[in-house]
Length: 55
Image 1: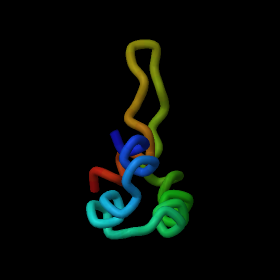
Image 2 (image 1 turned 90 degrees about the horizontal axis):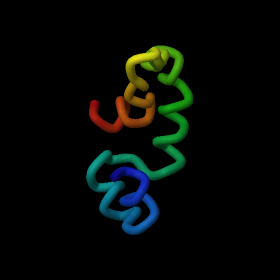
Image 3 (image 1 turned 135 degrees about the vertical axis):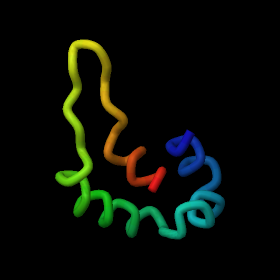
Image 4 (image 1 turned 90 degrees about the vertical axis):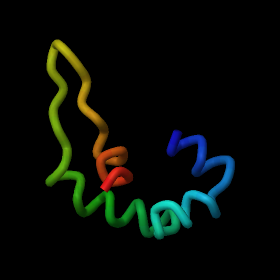
C-alpha cells in the first residue's frame, strides 16, 4: 500500500508520514539496523520500511 501511495499520490503520503521521500529514505537508512528483523523458515518479517511507516 505504501509503495502504491508513494507512486500514485506522493502529496498524500507526505501528509500521512509528515516526511517527503528523501527525508523518509534518510531516516530509514539511520534506523534500519535498529528495527530490522531476520526471516525464519516459518515466515518473513515485516520490512524495516513498513515498521518505520507504522511508527
